[in-house]
Image 1 (cartoon, chains in turn purple, blue, brown, green):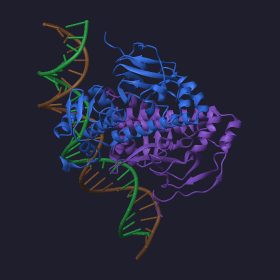
Image 2 (cartoon, helix red, strand yellow):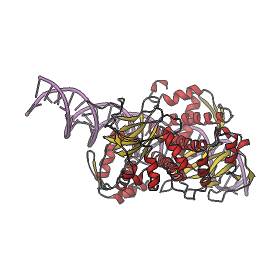
Image 3 (cartoon, chains in turn purple, orange, red, cyan):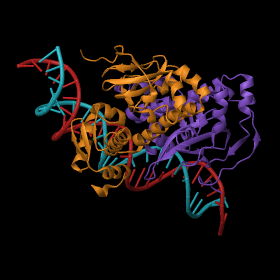
Image 4 (tube, chains in turn orange, brown, purple, green):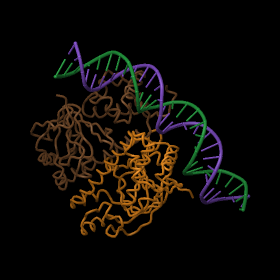
Length: 250
Length: 250
DNA sequence: CGCACTGTTGATGTGCATCAAACAGCGTGG
DNA sequence: CCACGCTGTTTGATGCACATCAACAGTGCG
């Protein structure tokens, strides 16, 4: 059976525990004391599994919980009035989904699992309540919200000023850096999303993504085979991003 | 003396009072009780004036305060590594500056006054402290942070999917809507920024902005003379934004 | 007045979108 | 087993929207 985004999410209940979570140090509880983590734990009643291709939530759904990604890979996207999709982000373990829903108490984007995923729902009302009592939890939440704003501004810079190849190089470096933070190789990575989704994220067409990969490959910066990317020359990629109007390097 | 962005800001001290502020209902204290507003008032020691062309803060400055715009018009912008500017937003009365600094305790962008401005500095550490005690203040702060995220995602949609004329129409409608919320005319508006800054904001060149204005004028949607814009046909402008791939209307 | 800055418009170039076709992988069913 | 459709990727040919380059007009200011 093919996955449909509009189907209800597939859930399986699991007892949760931030304390023993592998992304504890990247997630909401970062820097909290053992005691504080235990109090946060009481909010997270169970983990939820989301199957590949299914939605964790849709735009318009009321906000109940924020979601900490425990496992897997999501995309978030908004739809324009005339139905075109803009991917606003790709989220991996330790990252928080649903932040944009706080504004209106309704989710402003949809979150789709790009592979089988597991998330920790954090009931938002209770999170606010608990962060009244725990200043460091409140501070973490502020930082996470602010970090998303900084990230978005970086994306605006990318969309407004970078060529297609530069965008692609920046995208790969960003993925690589986030994966390596999580203990994965910063060299060899697997793209969980399709070319079209990368394109939407970067403000380009899928064909341009393909050609971009080819360019970077022909310059000896990456090796690419389908969804498998190997970064051969991270420094070269970085130069590709910053060296915007530098035709001498060709 | 021409204004330099790198000069220190010009300050003049004024006693502050949220309670009597004209944008009380658009700003941080929205929905707070009289008593709660008074407690917030105690944080804001004095208002600060920023002269046209001067910076309220620069990227890299340490975060001390958030700033509520009381009067005037700002732009915020980030610089790419190779020195190109990306305008990330234009802020008017009631809007909060400095949210992106919470992430790293340093401002990630610069805020420049586009006209003589007045802001209320809100010491962030104390704001966090007070919002421990005042749940509705905490909630407001969360909403403001989240609203910025939603706004940015809208900008990504615009940058990724819209033609130059559509971007410009969306920009004008957005300005018009925010100005009318503040009691100004939604029809007649004055652009406080230069064409180049609009262009940077929308991911276009200044010449393209000029031509876009000409197009909208030739379609009878707006009247434009320098910095003065009159919106003649708001509905037509809206159709211009949503009707993305509709060549029949030309 | 003269200069710097901003805005407008025209001519030309180019980077990416669009259109199109071929191919690979993969599950399904004859 | 192969044929088949379906999805995703790659590559080529062509067109267009916007960038770039350039000239000039309007405005404010020392």
